[in-house]
Length: 107
Figure (cartoon, rainbow, N blue to C red):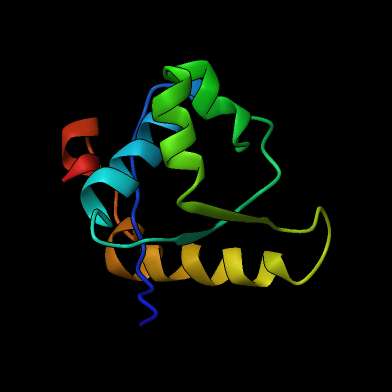
């Protein structure tokens, strides 16, 4: 079964540990029953399996890595259209108005 959905996380920074923590939550909570997760990531330098080893003990990182299949978007190309579609959907759903504070944005 293929499940596609959009998840947005608001954070103060975008470090390797922040990314790894979100990936762990995704695997352990959102897709706890799935054997393998295919994740499409952009080329940000923190979006690497090595980030899991920076954030967690090797045994935990290895457990997470074994369940991930990561595909990186090309640096140039049609993936920009997909990103624009996602931003457009978010705009239509919630970002077409001023959001007064972080708590409201997270909600």
